[in-house]
Length: 174
Ligand SMILES: [Zn+2]
Image (cartoon, rainbow, N blue to C red):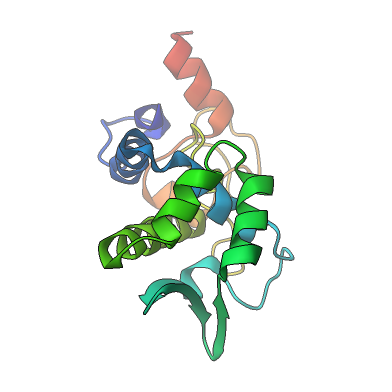
């Protein structure tokens, strides 16, 4: 788990991972998958990064906003997208989307949480605690344990992390 990315001392950086696990337990996994696809379908150097996206309920619709741009999820398009990216969750998503205020709010909250995770982690939803690389946080640092190059970002180094390979080895106990 994420704690093994702390090279010497114990972890506190597993908070976001725990948040994700809680989200999954609340049955929101499929909604998360949708946002994951939305975010990953963007070009790598997307003008809009995940953190700039905000989801919010707007009357009876869910809006996705990024700067001046806005996308709404209308019933037909939403249903189609949902059934493609989340076959098992499509009904659940549509139920939330077609629901009352609190259900739309739940959908928006979940989408926003996932967008945050995608902006923070290299592998959101995966086992790695390593941070996402971007222009301001390039993956150009060496692992303190195995000395492999370009496996960590400055944000990883600041947290005392080691690389995925070393973290996995530590977790398995050899
Ligand atoms: Zn390493």
